[in-house]
Image 1 (cartoon, rainbow, N blue to C red):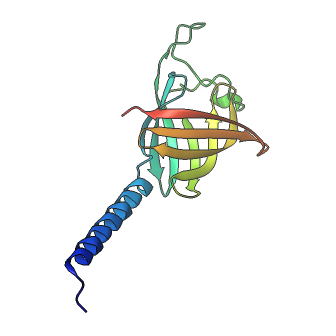
Image 2: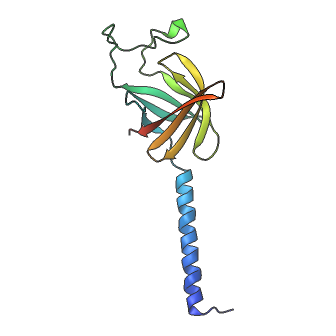
Image 3: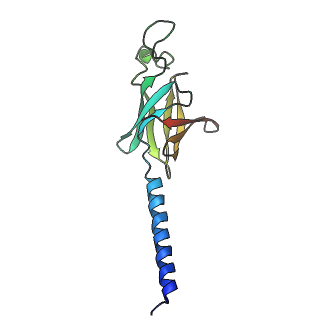
Length: 151
């Protein structure tokens, strides 16, 4: 069957638009979460990596790396495990075992060096340069913050 000329143009235009939308959807779903992220308060950078299909992340930079009370590099002094309280904060894994939980979303645990506790957490990539990090206590009391890409 032959279509009149204006139909051929319309079909080609629609096909081209649909192809473009499909490419954008694939690109958005494939946004990389790996890289270095700056915490909401600007005090810490965390390098997020793929660790065997799960996300993990270590502290790689501190805005204030020296503990004012000791004059030495900051340590994990609030850790619940007394044996870990003298380890340097640089290098501490804070994003732990995050498994895929949907489009641009991961669930696992996050360690908060400010209080030495591990929380159930979700990470959602909201854009190429912004990631929402949410930690929860008992699954109902949650706190969120947005980290920005630093690399």
